[in-house]
Image (cartoon, rainbow, N blue to C red; front, top):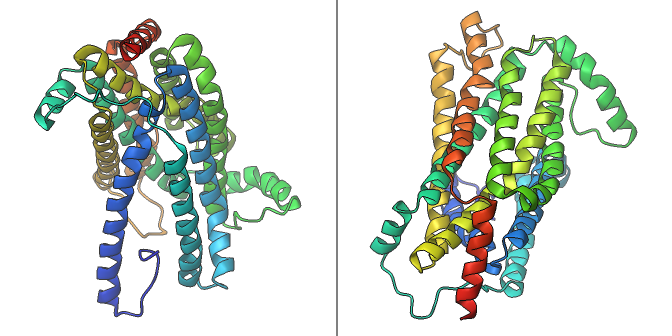
Length: 382
């Protein structure tokens, strides 16, 4: 609530206030989100149940993301009577209250069934030693970092692609029937600017088909194993990223189709990442006879944040390398346009392809999943 309030300070005071409250918000969010993510590793030892939980979780995540991207701005403007600062404060206050209640409900209604043995004692040094000897953990750490490098690069570069490369007349012609159909059912949130509206619909299509992929993820993972489903679909989703390099500026339909198919195949992988991290905690317990769920998830969070930071830094560095002129309505140079095309296709595809290749060295396949689960159940029963 504090971070999204605007006190009556001077400009410098507001800047300091925003930096301090936002830093504290992120600190508390990390402290909360880490154990929340790790819950999947301790609520159940059944790997199929974990696949199911992770799928439900990320369907909800995608619905929330879609809601924020499509509806949040109109709600803020309505709540603030046209004053965005007031609207943001009101809306975020309600979301903070609702979120707090939901987190308390989560605390009161979940049970940790997979807990370390009472006699287990280990130092941070021993836990870290176990981690770096755990090859599946090392692979998942690198994979997590690579995945989020791609997501940061790809997500950040689309806006430049639409603004500077996509043909605006073709985009307007393509989205007009969609906007008219949405308007007929009372949805008028995409505005009249073709670039903004097109970009919004482009993202919305990707998210909707990510949700479809997420809902099917459990079925495939239960049948073929998480590793194989993740690797195959990560590779397929990468192909549809690469295609963006070859699309002419007027081929808007192909761009939307590629985004939808990328979203679908990538959606199949989304719940599996976190379910596989929980499996790595099981592997660590199975191999070392010591459970370290928290530190395994903590390290993955470091990989996630590192990936986002590296991806964002690469995005701005590559734009500079190709002489992008910021805050300009002028047509960018041919070199810059080439760089933007590479930024939405070839460059973000590289980490995904490396990640798919790494999974060939990940030992926990369907057969080993079953073996680990059976052995740990017997140990815990004993």
